[in-house]
Each structure stands twice: as C-alpha cells, then as structure tokens.
Amino acid sequence: MKTFWLILALSLTTSSASAAELASAADAPSGPALLDGVWKLDWDRSDSFEPGMKALETPWLLRRLAGIARVRVELRAEAKPSDCQDCAEKIKVVLTTPIKTQKVEAVLDGKHRPGKTLTGRATLDRYTWTSEGGLEMIREYELPSGSQARIRDIRSLGADPDTMLSQITIWVDDTERASALRTFIRTSD
Image 1 (cartoon, rainbow, N blue to C red):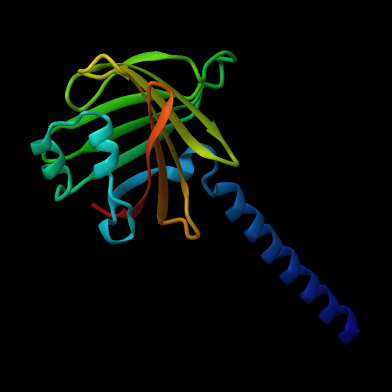
Image 2: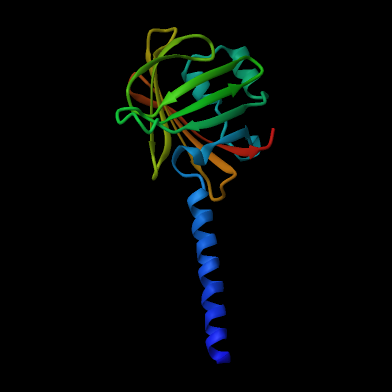
C-alpha cells in the first residue's frame, strides 16, 4: 500500500510541475512581443555608425552629436485584432535621441509606407517579422546629392533575452557602403 501512495504522490508532483511549466511557456512572449521593452545602446559592444552616417550624407555636426548621444528605443508589439484576417501585427517604436524623439507605427506586412528620417527627409519604409530573423526594416530615400539610399536594419535578440542586436547595412545607388552591428541592452527606464 505504501508503494501505491508513493507512486501516486510522485505522479501528482510530476504532473503539477509539467502543468506549471506548460502554463509558464504559454504566458512567455513570442513573435514581435519578444522585443517589448526599453532598450539603450551599449556603446562598448557596438560598431561605430560613423561610416554609415557619412554614406548617408549626414552633416558633420550631427555625426559628432550621434557619436556621444544617448540612444533609447522603446518597442511595444500590438497583436492583430482577432476579428480581422487581413490585418498585420504592429510594433510601436519610440526612438529618443538628444536631437529628436520619433514615433513610428511599424506595420509588419512588408508593404511600403511613407515615413521620415530624424532630419525630416521623406522615406518609404517597410517592416516584416520572421521568427528566424526578427524585425526587419527596409528604408529607402533620396539623399541631398540625389543619390538613392537603402538601409536594412534587422533587430533580433542576442544570446540572452535582454540583449538586442541591430545589424544595419547601407547601400547608396545599389552599392553597399557601410555595415554596423549595434548592441542594445533592455533596461527598466
């Protein structure tokens, strides 16, 4: 009889732990919600973006300010409405720098939408999400010289969930001109 109670207790304990683990896994964020939070640029673990800014014809003073600026990014995922089959998920982005704060609603459907650079230039932006690659932004616009720029920024989680990697590649007139890997750390503020 003791064996019966021991087996029953073990099976109940094992089932309870499995149920708790399953409930925890079901509540864990997935998809774009993995990037929810406030992120700050980790200067020590990031490549310089100076060559990219130079390729994008950013004025010297703004490049200098960007080299010392505190960069803060807030990301908040919005699930698509359950009653809308054609709607796409969205991520609300708030980019804060000493120069300007910019708010963007990134619709994750891969369609071009009008946008603006931090300096006010008109852009065509498109956003997608894949579980393998993360958040991808493609931004296209005309530079002051008349050249055409394309920026590809892929953001995904690093080895731990509080590290976000941003791989940025810049093309000018279809020639790759710069690339940088930037590291952001999730913070509480």
